[in-house]
Length: 312
Image (cartoon, rainbow, N blue to C red; front, side, top):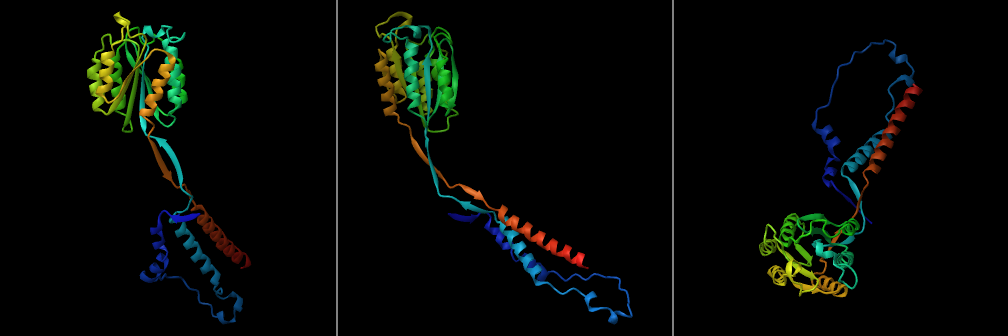
């Protein structure tokens, strides 16, 4: 148990009343006097009141307690340490029409992706996590947040084609880069999951990845589906690899839910949560106690004066 003063300089005010009495001239006021020829015959009880030393002592104590309250005494408790995360993680999820394909061990691609992303979020409780979804357009479904419960609720509401049927990978990366401009920490991580190729982003994926890389964003790209697919649904493995390697990340491909789970666990191992210990000592203000003492002494002095008037 430790006690301290937030404003110890206030203790310098303790001798102020005595300094004022010593430095300032005495006050002399003029009073009207009444001459009483028979003053000597008046009873002694009607003379001047005898001094009462306890009143001066009480006044000294009241001043000392007032100065102590101004010094702001506090009770300083033992240190409290809390561990906090040090990364901002952005999840980019493809919601194009092909994500409803049921080729992930009987489940659709979006269902498999949601299940794995939920586990990934649950394993990073101290990180701020955001969610970007993209199709024909890209938009931020959830900004960086530590409220993972709300994030999981928003993830449950995603479905294919809600952002349009196409796949704008470059626009998603560009939007992610804008989100990282307001990120609070240096550990910037993006995981992009898609099952297709870019179908006409305003910003080419390579250019968007270059901008994100300059901001210190490391991108891991994950693809789903059959790599042998041709046409509009074909995977652009070369572009996904270039995005990842150009930002210091890695490209992965998953053909089933088990492989997808393993990929996100590997990313978690490659990019562990950065733990930071934040320590502080709780402080409880105690100024109310000396103020209560001042109030009690003032009440005592007032009561003494009232009793003296009644007795007179």
